[in-house]
Length: 220
Image 1 (cartoon, rainbow, N blue to C red):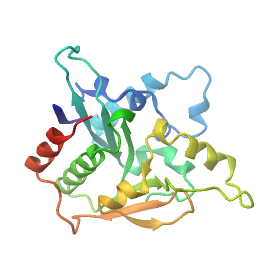
Image 2 (image 1 turned 60 degrees about the vertical axis):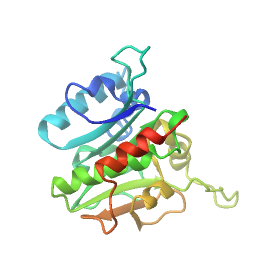
Image 3 (image 1 turned 90 degrees about the vertical axis):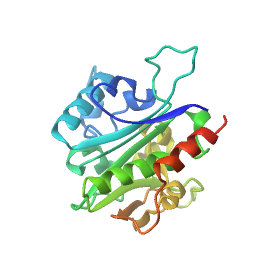
């Protein structure tokens, strides 16, 4: 499987993963997400361009360019992280806010056929290494418990049910995926906790060579 990890740049913004390109859950306040005639793809592209220009948003694409595909094929996965001031939508999470000293790993969007085979680890390690190089103090992320079973006697509020139903669309990360990358629960919640990773991390990160070997070994 010929997959390439690419840092997000102004030139590759149009190539972000499909759901990522149309998701504004993190990027706009809850009120602005329901604006009439909202062009979510335009808003997302503008958000990315502005954030990268101002140095408050970074990310990575995973590209899989098959020989029979157009060279502008969208990424199969995209991960984004940003200053919490640039992600007003995070206020919708019950375990918010993001700590003042941390950047937010807001979303990891991945095509379903490629999910769960190790690509998430590659993307998270890329973000962690990038954040360490940028001398950031910590990363935080909101996750969800994939094994959550709702108690009929204690139902979730409607807004939390909506978030849980849209985990793929908004790029919310599985708690187990975050914990495998070294994150620990900082603000628990029965289904939507906040996790944190202080930098530099105590564990070893994937080397560039190890990441390439992992990407090349994955067969879907």
